[in-house]
Image (cartoon, rainbow over all chains, first blue to last red; front, side, top):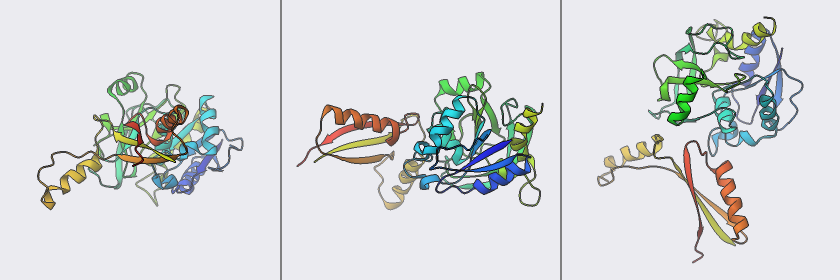
Length: 221
Length: 82
């Protein structure tokens, strides 16, 4: 499959995400924030970083970039979209996902290996995992605490929209939420970085690879 | 010209780590009478003239861009030109 990776001004992990897409058996297509053209991709990754310098709020300016107009439209038609870290923040600001990410409760930037439990293994991006499976990927953020009102949190849990939870809450995220999906299951946001855990040489293992192979498995299932 | 001010504050139920950090620093500097701090943002918008239409636009901008209604509240007021 052709998976587009968007580069915003201030994106950091776009090249790693492209690499993870290729290691996952897909073709990586570079997309540019200033261009509405999605170049015929089958799915989209919004990578981590500090788009637009995190000015105003993380993801708040990126949300109104030309490419996001197309991404929001495509997501509405069912295209798989994965937002990692800053990409998750952009998806929340775009209202493609509920809730918001605020500053970590302890006010420090965290960079470490993080254990997660996959709660929903039926989304477009997590079908390579088993529900309940624990994986270790990289966590690195300063504003990664997931918040939403109680009614929204109850709905997310009730509808199975919590995709992954922290095993050991690192940042004050409500109900240990590390990632969520929309009602349709095609849009997923995840605060930790699976794209940094796809090769033994440079990460804590290859547990993150499932996020980049799920689409292929689904396509040929 | 006139100035419209939009104040954006984290909702009361949302944790405000920045405000807490400031609150933690105050006693160290000898300011002991302040029990809580919440930190927000102030936007100063210059407009040619304050009309209902302009204020409606400011409200829309505050809701759409200046604040995130999931975590923040905002107020709009016209500043007196003293």
